[in-house]
Image 1 (tube, rainbow, N blue to C red):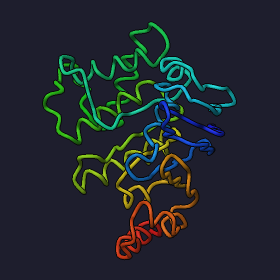
Image 2 (image 1 turned 90 degrees about the horizontal axis):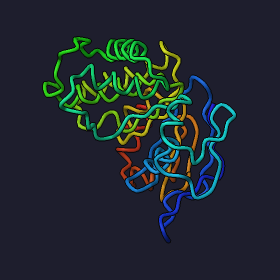
Image 3 (image 1 turned 135 degrees about the vertical axis):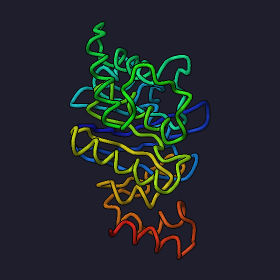
Length: 251
């Protein structure tokens, strides 16, 4: 579904992403991990059209999309959540999702946007009552709203950016199960950026690890968790942490 080759992003003299290549198959959940500043968000920004690449190719369903504007990319079928939810608080929950649906559907059909919003809200477990306010949502509710907005655009590929941030342990498990449900029931392919490595390892099919803008490891969760380079740059040299994550990956 997605083929990325030789992706590079420079900001002045600083190279944030350096010659990164990877592929994502239809129906797959790919985990994208790495320490802060490793280039994860920069890659998401290039995939979603926020930043044009400095070099490299991004092909989605066989078509080059590198450098396209965000609205053209979203209309082709790539949706995205954001790490920090910023809903329109003067709009209701439904109106926030409806607006995303209207934008993402690539048409001027209010009926299609409404239908997309209702389906997305039902999928994530938020009320479809058109009067329900955003202000009543806690951290978990705001993450669900962010996910519903992305789903309302009818994506074929979902870029999920730190869906577990700010959640407690039970909420993390629910959010991870939700991503798996979206893949299994809606057939949406997912790339998931996350810092909570233990939870991510239980859900994803493959993992790719970045460090200082370069890909340092890629493969099955159990193999990546035991990769010495990953242990060094992502987990440090704490043997107990390494064993814990490896155990999670084997479950």
